[in-house]
Amino acid sequence: MPKIKVTTVLDVTPEVLWNYVQHIDSHTQWMKDAHSISFTSTQRQGVGTTFDCLTKVGPISLNDKMEITRWEENVAMGVTHSGIVTGVGEFLLTPLGENQTFFSWEEELFFPWWMGGPLGAFLAKPVLRLIWKQNLALLKQQVE
Image (cartoon, rainbow, N blue to C red; front, side, top):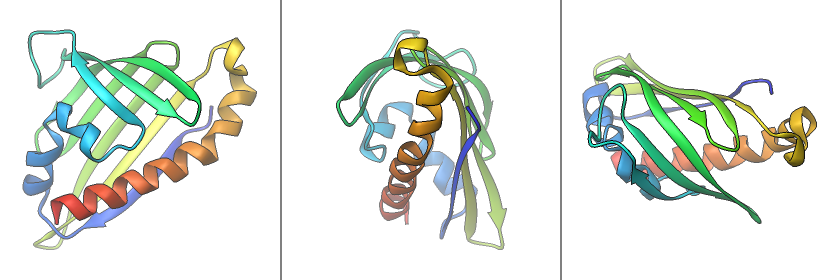
């Protein structure tokens, strides 16, 4: 699947934004497609943290198994997806001026054959992009 990338500018510093997004279990408060998060590791932050995320998009519901692979405070959080849908994703926080942050969310996902494989991924891309843009608008509302 080609990468999906959504971005926004938030009127907060990277430190303020990071203080919010570093709490993985709070992602359900701003991600409409993430319904619940259950940690499968004892740690809840940092590289090596693992969790299951019940994800719902329309009629499709799946358990997204994730692991944090990158954790740079105030800069980046990366994950791998190893459930039914596999792939990688990353949040990047870039300072803009004194009190703004450019937030970039990029994912590359691979669908199993029974979800249409590459064709299913291609068809899902605009839907996921729309949902994730809405997620970033909700994040912006909550953080600013």
